[in-house]
Image (cartoon, rainbow, N blue to C red; front, top):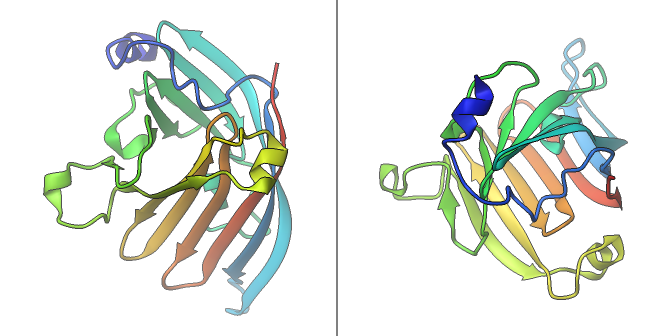
Length: 207
């Protein structure tokens, strides 16, 4: 059972810096471009993307949230894409992104965030496997939260961490702020056009 497997993975309060309560809503403004399959032409538009925590289940030192339209679903977005439901799993100080179904235990491939965050931290891959920061999550920088983030609820002393996952065919960039979560998300493909840049515009904490 998933609950049994999770109990072996960590201890303590799970990921207190990530706001995961039922009814939590993030609304993003997204500039996106994609390749139209029928014509082969590149299209672009701006959309509103609403991410919501549908339900949360706590067990021992874990928190499992069912979330609609987590920002990473913007990768390869086009107008035909249906709403996406996934699971965000917090175990100890680690956040995993799982598909919407199944009961398997998470792996390093599912790892999204590893707290505490700090500049030049690399996770999600054995550092000795490569001599660069590719094919792993890498904290590129940490800066003080800007005015827009403070208006959304960040503290003036909070840091905004830029976390990247770069591969040869594509890249993802997250900007994370404590108690707000993902305030920016970028996906870019290096071949066929498929790009998205989302910036948080409103945040509503859940119950």
